[in-house]
Length: 358
Image 1 (tube, one colour):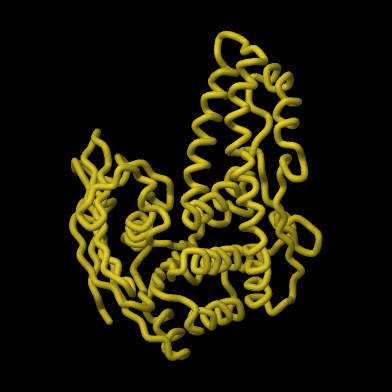
Image 2 (cartoon, one colour):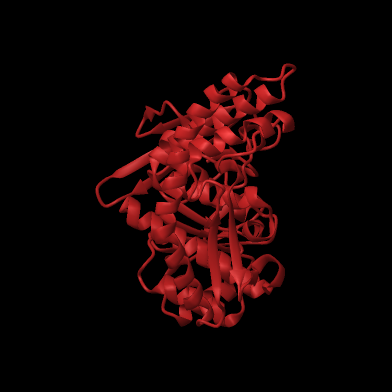
């Protein structure tokens, strides 16, 4: 890669299994992990726009990578020049849309910012579920993009200078209802697989000590969606904003029948977030029939020895393909992986450069 974040140039070949990327805080470890995520789904994990991904005072960035699959070897290039459109090439062929890459190379990234899935608002939770649903199902991605586009138009209409009439609102709603129904039904179907997997992973990590619940909360559940949209038109015109739809969904996380965000310990919340990500991994692996990349940023943060051991046992079970993790020091990671007989490659990061050490 070139001029991506704090890297002028970096060229590295990773191990097929476990890769430890280590170095001081602020040296660029997370930027390497984000580059892998970016190549896989055409989007920075942190939601940064292209102009903020270019190294200081430079005019472009370029990242590229090779994915070795069982069937073939794929080459992905993502490049951007300041004030121009981003280009994505797959095996030298330019993709028409950014979203065309999503789902081809599934990736699951576990990072400290995941705490916002539990502690943040409903938007953070919706974004989390939408991201892996988009990776798992291209039709879900297409429906979500179409729905959001229509929702923005409806919102602009309601906030405009003129009060919309009922017929105009019904015209927008007739289109929104189609996509809202599709998205809602796909979420319900996916959660039938996802929720049991998440609870099983949490039980494995915590040795079944805590009673965890995960629920999907939606105004659309068990409702006539067309009638619901119709009934809300007067309130929406009065409030001057959309008041019904999947954009209002939320997900409830409970521990011992109490809100996890308020009553869960740091260890319990961290374990729950790992369980969510591992369930995401399992879901993508099952539905895409290929092994996702697993990325763990600040791997050892806030995980006690027992929970860490359980997670490492899962990694060592052979259920995962290529794994990337970051740490501030190699000795700690090396001792833990050596103890379990897990082979790995180690890469030292220092101020925007990366080199293999083991």
